[in-house]
Amino acid sequence: MSDPQIEKLLILQDRDTLLQRIEKELLRVPRERELIEDEIAAEKLRIEAAYQTIKELEVERHEVATEVKSKEAANNRFRVQQLEVKKNEEYRALTHQIEQNQADILKLEETEIELMLRIDTSRTAYEAEKASIEAHIEERKQALVRLDETERNLEDQVEAARANLLEARKSPDDDYLMHYDRIKKMVKRAPYLVPLTEQKCGGCHLRVSNEVASSVRVSDTPSFCDQCARMVYA
Image (cartoon, rainbow, N blue to C red; front, top):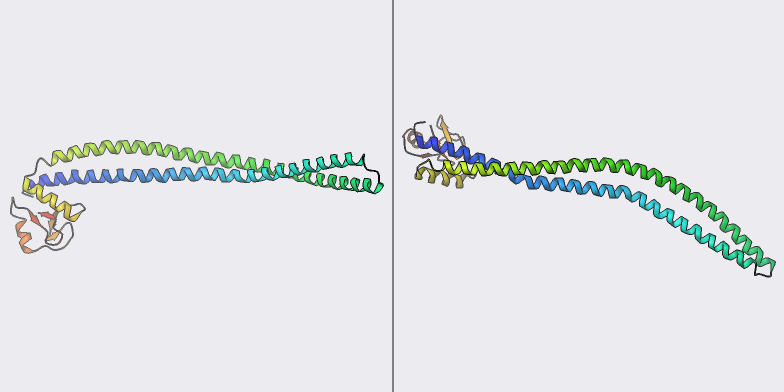
């Protein structure tokens, strides 16, 4: 490589591609943060879902306890009525109703005890699951902390890379720099400056014309691939 301008453009390209790589990494940070935050939100929903079973059992137990109180209150009314009735048939009917309610109360109390045991078992399982979920949430929060640190580091690297790129742009001649910028807009993706090997472009890997192959050997003259328009050098 005899053209010093090519050497300067290669330095520029290295710094340019480094900046692009760092900027690309930086652009991924918000998406990674969003994914982690979504994971945390999903884990919190898991905690709520795990507690839902306990809530349903407690509602059921409350309904049973309310029914027990209702039947006990009814029996108290029936006993008062027994003191007021005059006929044996009415007294026996009230007694039968009291006995029926008392039998129902015993069954309801057994159901309430079963529900309380199920609530205790569910609560123990819930606490264990909750602890596991909260530990995972804490891990994801720590991942967010690390991601924030990564973002700050990348921002510092971008700032330094931009400064180095601006410095590198001062070295090449204006016409070479103009061609570099033009190629960069055309091909969209590095490399913009590639070696020519056995008359093949190092960018698109296609054979260039004899004219291009000959012009590459002429110093101080930029040459371009016939196919992809990248600047080529020997």
